[in-house]
Length: 405
Image 1 (cartoon, one colour):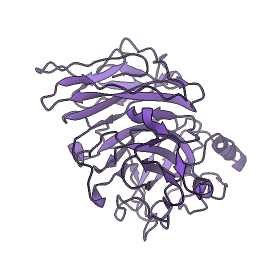
Image 2: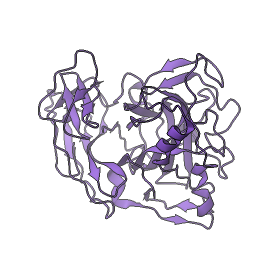
Image 3: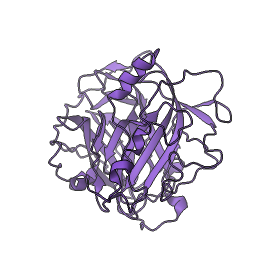
């Protein structure tokens, strides 16, 4: 699973408009959404309630089994933190809606820098996090959620929502079939609404009590704990369960309810904003971790100087006591010839990078990798994505174990 972003040493102090906001999937009410956290007492939970909150300007297409680059705009990342990516079958969610987590990230979300990211590096997103739609997700329309518990600053809860259509997945012909799929996923975790009744701990990357099947750990995982304070946590952390009735997804139709046109949305073409910017380039090595809730990935950092040289990886943290430290998967040593039809290619390095031809890569998922275009200036070799060599002598560093360039 790949994770790219651009780091900066800017100061942490920033206005509301510099906070992180979802870019893709294109959120509901794009014209009226702002980047602030949810209101202190959760009056705008879920999805930042406001006039026009569920206007659909673009319907986002997300085939089951595909990894898409969830991208963000903004700069104030509050030292990172932890986030979850969830689904509900409600097209206009309320406090009664139940949210089910398809991916968790502990630490480093949406960045682990101590300061801020540059606003809109290379013009489209401040950070990009790959998220895979489970291949057995029932086809239909959903509301997608990104929720964030920040690490530094006021104890806050962020959430943006977007309409998505899942295709090519399991057929949810009955409520029982849909219920069986979602029963295996944890409910979205909520805290800091308000923070004086249930608060996460500042300077900690929050360790969710239920991580789900797909999990990545950022570089801050050494400080990941599930500490909470307050006498209202029992009811507050259960807000993601809503009324506990997930239901079945609506099947796609000719029109899209809730607002404007139903223009199909795909992620921005530049899915990895690292081609011409200084800062940190984050790349993972993935593996399974027993007891850790599924696929586990750890990240380390390459510092790229303004001249384009790689200064070397930063010291990576030791893994937390639970779950156990993972072992790195074997790399795909030689590029695989690009498929004639653009479909998936077979692979054996589960969770690892697969080099496909000279201009594509894939992430090995259950024996297959879906070809994705490399960003400008990048190359794939021996299971690692690096910048192409330049006159500055740029080169990639590779480490073993849970750390990988």
